[in-house]
Image 1 (cartoon, one colour):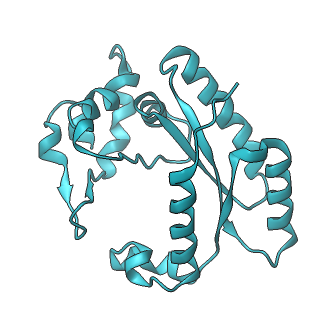
Image 2: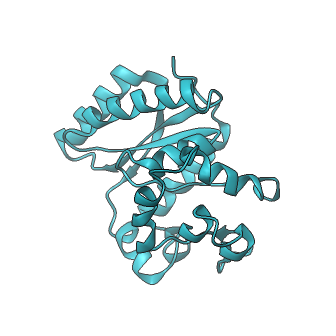
Image 3: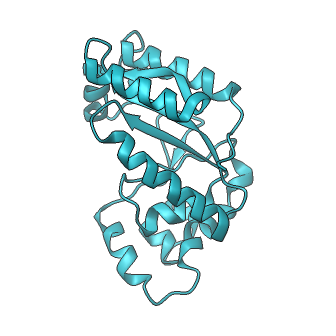
Length: 199
């Protein structure tokens, strides 16, 4: 990804095939850390990813951009390049505090760089129905963000932690696990949901 963002390689050179015939990916490595420093003097640096993906977006049904949790130039590039944002929210203490900051950032991106950006919804992750903490996070999220919160919740699950170490998505690693079933249920819900426009 870094090579594509700094225009040292074309997008066709950095797209890689996977074991799934209809899934392609652009990998990233430690070099990506240098992107923010190198982009300091560059004009329209927030559009680097958008310009890169514009070359191939008609070839794909969906392009999913996995962002780091920090609000950085990379995240800003992702927001500028995207049609909508899916927000994962860990069912943990302080999670909602960070969510407010993220929503403010999305609002600013809409007004400055990407007026068409929408919020697809909020997905609760690392959910444990046995704990009061998870229940409180769910209640607070639904109280403040109402129908923006997906009904499906992704539970804490051993198989979700194991799958990446085998280089597999969890639905191929163990399709019968609670994690797999939850992500499949979420995918069905996601495909039927309309995006929310943040006021």
